[in-house]
Image 1: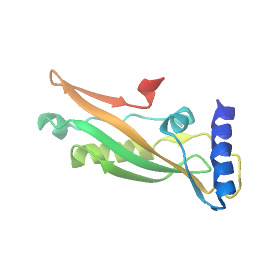
Image 2: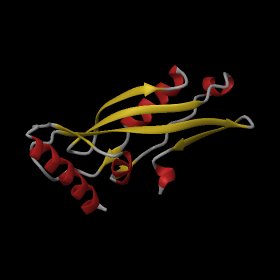
Image 3: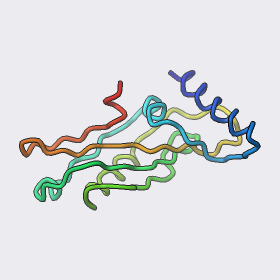
Length: 133
């Protein structure tokens, strides 16, 4: 799995190098980032969101340092503020394999999607990337 991540990053870096674009941050597919996660606690469905029947899609952009820790988490979309806060807290605790590759790369980034659903008043959080495996 490490080889898959490194090969994918190398492919992206080659594309950047060929275009003459020097980049300190590299965008990766959500599935590649998800596969490199060594710790990925799921966000909690906040009680206030359940009581208010708030559900829907939450989208986050996460930047990951080459050491494997999130350096920035931005919530781009969420059904409510409580869900946004829960997602930001959970993603801040994620850890990834250390990146070994092009020394010009200072961080990796991707967007992750989560579904917060209430089926028969039963809360469920689905990681869209995990469900693809």
